[in-house]
Image 1: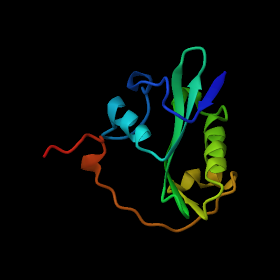
Image 2: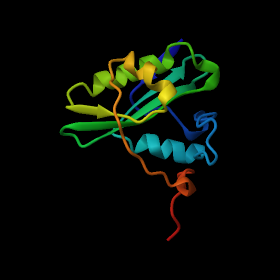
Image 3: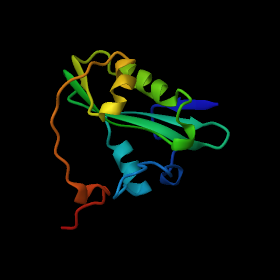
Image 4: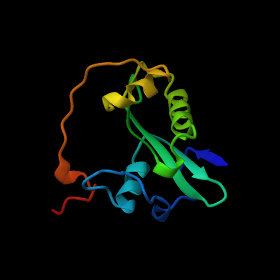
Length: 139
């Protein structure tokens, strides 16, 4: 059974293993925890029996009109079970009072988001792959 939580209460960095598949420079579990900690809204999917985190979604907002969803991830062994769909539904419900909720995704994922009521749009992005690990800058 999968439980969906809106806080990090009871979650440790050690429970955040196996995410960011295919990333050349994936964040450490500590950096992953920090990104969850500093997000305006999170939903975490936890397998109740093992207490393993199997999925998560994050959002950042201006608290007025807009929200952005940068991450939705489900561990590969748990994909295809509706976990990502439920994470997205819970987050969209949480953000329902905002004028706009945006995200960027690869073209092969657009149908998934369209089935949840989102519309295709054109966007731009910049990436600094040297910072992909999420490690803090040394000053």
